[in-house]
Image 1 (cartoon, rainbow, N blue to C red):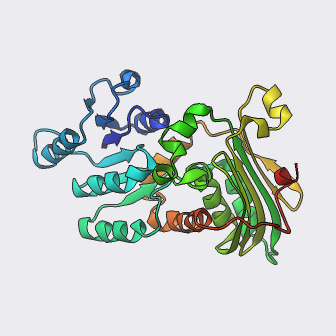
Image 2 (tube, helix red, strand yellow):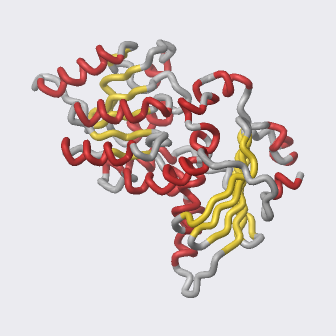
Length: 314
């Protein structure tokens, strides 16, 4: 049994990590969050020590590292706001633990190199959560694409629309300096998916850049991709809203649509299984999408694009 600590225990995504730790037969022994609304811990790990002070949490992990009568922390799960990921990963490695960090691993691409240097110095590992790579229909698509003998560049349309209320824009998620903006906070999984499926980015254009929606064009090694991201509920397809659902994920390859809005329930558990087996997604896996999104964030909007996502035509 492995012993975990977790940072960001009051956040939206933390319960998925609690469940993954429990379902893989491991235990949480310490948790941190500046907010104390963490009663969810009682459903998973009621005996876990809880801290609202970063300094006390750090000292506790250091104490466990050097005292033999209590188990030391072997993994630190990081569910904190994006701009704190780099700091919290460093904490994990400095106390002799591996880090399992939510997306995006970091906001700025230059942080990746220093984290690699810290991995080498400490002998510990940094893992990230790229759960779409483990979704069965997308794994099947990856296998089909890789098996093509005479692979040609495909026309791809990627659409991700998910409802977010007014709170989103006044929280840290709506602050680009803290979240990396919509392309980083909402889109990073999908840009990772695209580079994983279709190879390295060769050209990028931004056609729309608003706090609540973005769109653009990507030229990848094996695809020309028109992409659209939105947290505006009004962009959801009518059929999705009528079904009482508030997220729509779709990828179309040469006119053939694959809608993959379901099947996300246990993906964090699958990620943890991969990490514990030594096959988790590390810094190298995260790099292409982080570099790509960094470029998108700092691109000018093309005034009169030639090829746009169908949503822009509306």
